[in-house]
Amino acid sequence: MADKSTVPSFKMMMKPVLKVLSEAGQAVDNETIDARVEEILNLPAQVRAVPHGNGRCTEVSYRIAWAKTYLKKYGWIYNPSRGFWKLSESFDEDIDQIDEKQIAKSVNQQSFKNLEREDMTNLESHEAFERFIIAGLKEFALKQGKKPQLETDERECGENVLSAVDRASGQTPSGFGRTGRIVDHF
Image (tube, rainbow, N blue to C red; front, side, top):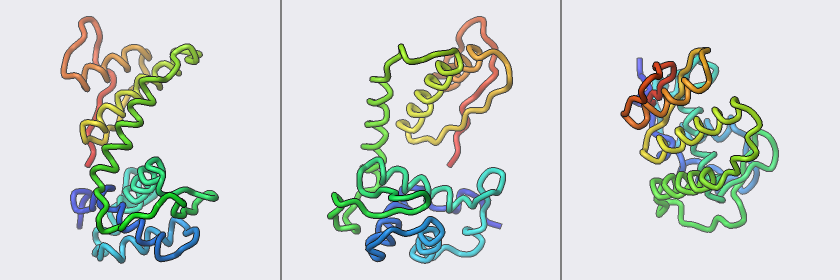
């Protein structure tokens, strides 16, 4: 059976997503996009069937969703209604000439800049602060070309955050145990 390493990256899904939407000329639902992208990439059944996480969706579908997210943040597609996607008016590119790595880099840089500008006074609780820090760590990992997953147990919030910082930076803050960790996917 195939594993996640056989599934094309979300970056490799960008051009096929754009081709599907360009050919349709109208809003297209998620299931149709997934099926057409699988066809365009000529993915074997074993690769199409690789489950993601708990198996509620396939890894291919999961990565196509990330491709759509990046293309949306880049301004080339939008979803006019839940579960449907369409090319934006601003898209007028030659799909074959698109640099997927540049799109991902640009989106990641913009997300990181937005995070830097976040107003810290709006953080109402230690849980909000933890979510803010974890989002920053995830963006940092993405900027490094990695897809993070934060795993935590139910201990103190501050320990989770410091442990995540510890793992992301490779340094050990004194006096804190490890209760969370950044795990690379892909």
